[in-house]
Image (cartoon, rainbow, N blue to C red; front, side, top):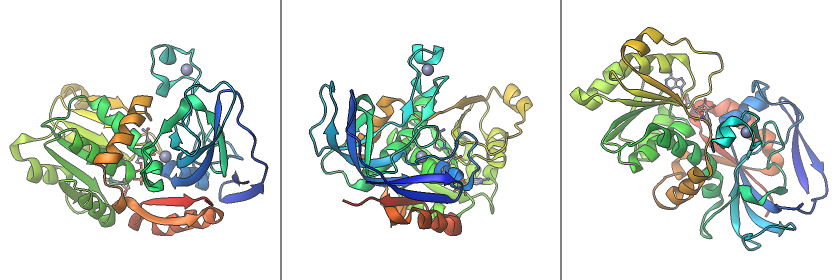
Length: 341
Ligand SMILES: NC(=O)c1ccc[n+]([C@@H]2O[C@H](COP(=O)([O-])OP(=O)(O)OC[C@H]3O[C@@H](n4cnc5c(N)ncnc54)[C@H](O)[C@@H]3O)[C@@H](O)[C@H]2O)c1
Ligand SMILES: [Zn+2]
Ligand SMILES: [Zn+2]
């Protein structure tokens, strides 16, 4: 089989290696499609702070069960469509003991600190598998991971029904948060970005209001959209100081801001306003298993992904896929890598 090894930033090598049989408790997956996300692009550029090289990338994927290792109980039948959680957790730190495996003190994520799915056959512990419906497309399967990010952040926010919600950043993650918020009964969702293309994608996915904050301030936009109703919940999914700062300034007193974005440099936040306005700043980190299960059911019923998929590249052209993203950033979204059938 072929496996894609990123030797160093900007350099992917394709090795021919033999597929190994699944070990005890493992399942071997024949990988069919991999989604590329912003964090992968950071690894491509050498700007991901926690990824040593060489690394096999890939953590958003769809595949089929190809072989089942010894001792696996209740394995899905061979040929079943699956994806898998990329987290490797220790199980004994304090967050793990409290069941909060997503924030394990010793967390490793496949595709970053451990090898990912960028290869034709991928062995993974069976308990990490997430079964997909038979009629799922490869695109749907590869979207389960980012939808699970969105589901987790919405769960962190509590009951969304009847609330006005702002999502800052209309990349894949912001778009999916906005869609999940609608499904959860949000009254009106306003999404922002600096890219008209991405705002247009959000409109195509049914997000109520999409505003380019390069042309209109967040305050003007939210006043126009929500009037006196205001908004008391925001998701920061741009990962930049400017959008976080605008949310802190404009959100209703007592509101909550979910921090989903990863900040290239630590943002300066006016903590005086946070204190006086009793604003709740809450983090959201990846997901739990239940978030994946819910992501599968939302993808089967109510989440639009077709407008988000910009291009597919064959596995052998993964490097070209990154070059495409580098030159079409603001006018593209999700790029997929297709493995040989
Ligand atoms: N918390 C988690 O578990 C988790 C998981 C996945 C991704 N992330 C992070 O979430 C963020 C979003 O991910 P993505 O894949 O959608 O990334 P992305 O880079 O595709 O999207 C970010 C968007 O923010 C927009 N933006 C930049 N400055 C802005 C501003 N001032 N106001 C409004 N929008 C602005 C960009 O134009 C872009 O469309 C990233 O920081 C990513 O690292 C977090
Ligand atoms: Zn990702
Ligand atoms: Zn742990």
